[in-house]
Image (cartoon, rainbow, N blue to C red; front, top):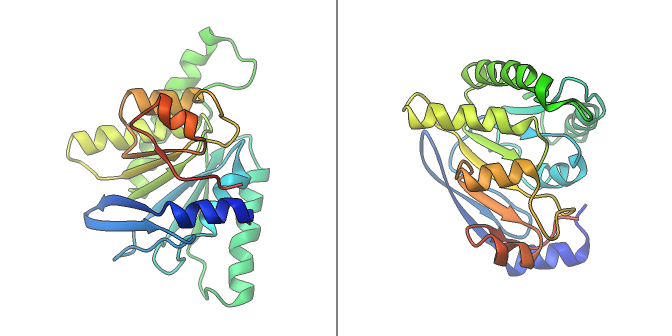
Length: 219
């Protein structure tokens, strides 16, 4: 749940995100509601900041964002379990009647403590796997907020978009833990201009990275 302060900030600073997913659409984030004019395939990246991403998940209108794909690292089972519990709760509460959520695991580019030399091979493997996933899922909207697993897939989605072979709107939300500088994933997506919309949760970060949007805090 959003804390009261975070909810007030989101209400005071509504976001108008221009998302193009096959055809023009507008996603509005205000008072914790998100709406679009069609039903895009949407990917959520889970990882070290799963609680923050799940706060965003609960804000969207489930009937508009379907099917939903939750993506986590191959070695991360807890994040997907949380997403599965949440989706099951929607069925039990009657908010949805069919299972339209999918849970996907992806190779990590680099494990914690892994040497940079050996990470070359694992990064290549992760990129190939990411490209296969993008082609198979063809996501129209991608949300991520920091896990390194999101970078290869975002790059692949961006490359296909540049080549005119697909179209994915990428929204990156930097973790609340990043107060003074961006995470490595965030920095790469920002510098390479891969993300269509880039959000931070601290005003000083927005001042340091002017192309980012400050929208209050989600936690």
